[in-house]
Amino acid sequence: MKTTFVATGDSFITRHIPEEGYPGYEELSDLIWNHDVRFANLEMTFHNSEGSPAAESGGTWAMTDPSMLDDMLGFGFNLFNTANNHSGDFGEGGTMATIRHLRERGMIFAGTGPTLQEASHAAYLETPGARVALIGLSSTCSKSSIAGGQGLDMRGRPGLNPLRFRTVHHLNAKHFAMAKELAEVTLVNAQKEYSISTGYTPPFAEGTMPLGSMSLVLNAKDSDKEWNETIPNAADLERTVSEIREAKRQADIVLVSIHTHEMRARKTNEPPLFLERFAHACIDAGATAVIGHGPHEMRGIEVYKGGLIFYSVGNFIFETETVARQPWDAFAKHGLPVDTGVGAYMDHRSCNGTRGYVVLENIWRAIVPEWTVEDGRVKDVILHPIELGQSAPRSQRGVPVLSTGDKAKAALEYLRELSKPYGTKITIRGGVGRVAMG
Image (cartoon, rainbow, N blue to C red; front, side, top):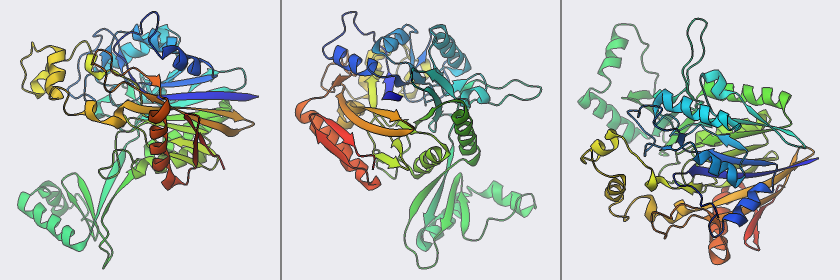
C-alpha cells in the first residue's frame, strides 16, 4: 500500500481561526486533510502561565492558550514536533504543561519530554498503510531548555531533544597571528593557560588555539582559504541514529524533524554544514525524510540516496506580534516601562514596522510539500507554495493561504535556485513544483 504525507513548517499561533474560516482556509485545510500523515512544527508553548518565564527566550516568549491546539487539529494535522528554540521559554513548568495539554487531546508528538530518554524517543502514528515514526530535535536552544537524562538514583530533567554542534574557525597565518596577539592583549585565555602551566590541562595542539570559547585552527602552509566548520555533537548524533534504527524495527517509515536557526556564513537561506552532515546520517540510518524548519524562510531541498531532505520549508502560521503577554525581561531588555502594552512593545521592536521580519519578503512565503511512499520508495513529491500576508495589518498577518499566479511561480523559482547546489531538479507547472527523485 502507499502512504501519503504532507508537511508544514513553523506554526507560531496566537489567534484562533474564525468559526467560518477565512478566505483560502478551506482550500489549504482540504490539502492537508487529504493525506495520511499530516505534520506541523509547534513553535509555541501551550498553557496559561503554568510555568515561569525563563531568563532566556527564543526571541519572543512564546506562550498561547492551550485551546489553540484545537485550531491546529482543525487544520487537519496529526503529527507534531515540539522541539524548538521556544520549547523552554517558560521553563520546565511550561514544557510539562504543554505536554499535558497535548496528551489531553491525544496528539502525537516528538521532541520534548520529562527526561532526555523520553524527549529523544520516536512517536508513532498508525495509518491504514503504514506505521510511521517521528523523531524531533532542535539545534537552536538555550542550555536550560535541554532535557536531562534519567539517572539511577535521580530523576531526569524536562526539556527538548538537542542537536548540539561545535564550530571550528579555520584561519590563514595572518589572522591566526592576529588572534594570538588579541588573546595576549585581552588575557581571554589566561585561565586555560594557568591550567596548562600547572599540569592540569595538556597544551594546545600545534596549529590550534582557543580565543575564549572559540576554537581556531591554522590553515596548512600556504593555504589562504578561511572558513567556519560546524560539526554535530557526536553523542547527539549517535543517540539520534540509534533511535532511527530502533524505530525502523518498530515502524515502516521514519521521519526526522529538526529545528535549526543556524545559517552558513551570513546566508540565512543556506543550511550550516553540521545540518547537512546530520541529515545525511539520518537517511543513512534508515530515515525516509528529514523535515527542516527554524529560520522562518525556505532553504533548499536535497534528494539523498532515495531520501528527502527539506532543509527548511519555512513558516506555516506566523503570528508573533499578537502574543497576549510578555514577561518583565522583554521590556527590560529594551529599556521600556514594565507596564508597556504588547502592541507598543512590538512597535518599538520593529521601529513601527520598518525593520525586522515584517519587511523581509522571504519570511512570508513558504512551501507545503506532499509526497508518497510506496514499497519503501519516495515518489510524487509536489511543492505547494503558500503566502502569509506580509502586507496585511498586524491583526491579520501571518495566516497561510495557497499562492497562485506570479507569486507562486516566483517562490518556486527561488526554491529551485536554492536546491540547485544539491543537484535537485524541480519542474514548475500549474502553480506547483515537482521534485525529480532520480
